Length: 167
Image (cartoon, rainbow, N blue to C red; front, side, top):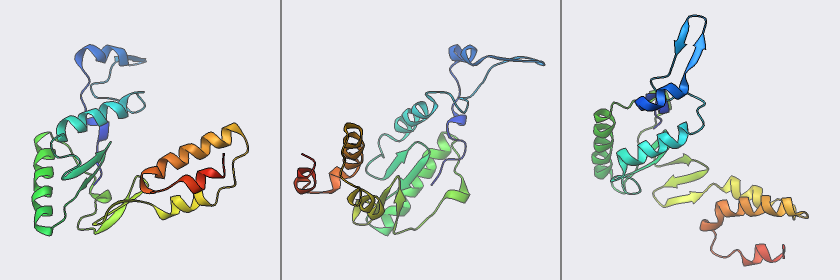
């Protein structure tokens, strides 16, 4: 599911409103809600989501910024989890973008991972790109490679053979 208003639904603290002041030919204005493009807007929104869903996260739902997944092992539990999620969204007046919501899916992609009844797995396409990369030859290429490798490290049991070529 995808949040509709995102961080534009978070009200600015009264003492922070003056920090967003801007002047136009019609007068001086400031934002009442977190504006798009504010440096820490995504971080603020993620912190709000963690605060609102802390007791459900990593058990019944996964939340990353404005993306949410309700999950369960059994179909009956899924309806209960969805009800709890919708109740919480309604309680805090959060909206979902119905055009970007999918219900009843057995698996799907989220943030480059495949989420299914087997758990969370890395997207095979991402692994293929890393496996087909040429061997790094500069310090910057090694750093880039290690960054990509870190992305999938928790899904691969033994990286020794692959890393041995580098060293």
